[in-house]
Length: 104
Image (cartoon, rainbow, N blue to C red; front, top):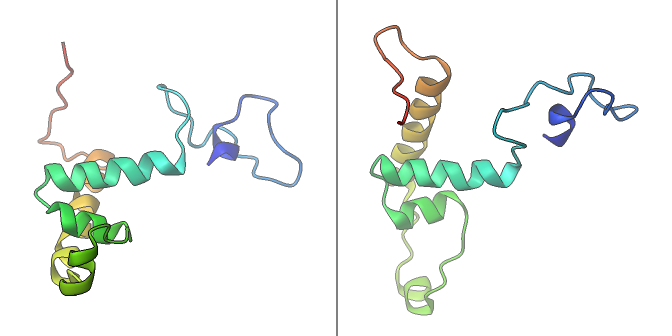
């Protein structure tokens, strides 16, 4: 990601020539930013915290839950990922009938 957010003249030999393909107005974006934004959006769209943690492959910290609750959340995860995908699709391919409001 960093290679695609470089300043002019910042191309590294043998790497991509598309140095501004991911350049954003608010500064550089890192992979961890996506790892944080996805779960936050899933939560806002109604996914349960335990399901989000499972989507992120985070191990259960509570020993008792880890031992006794062995569910995989396979069904809820199957529902959570499309929520995030639909939100990304809306953000990148805004339908003609959607108006973006700017904060005051």
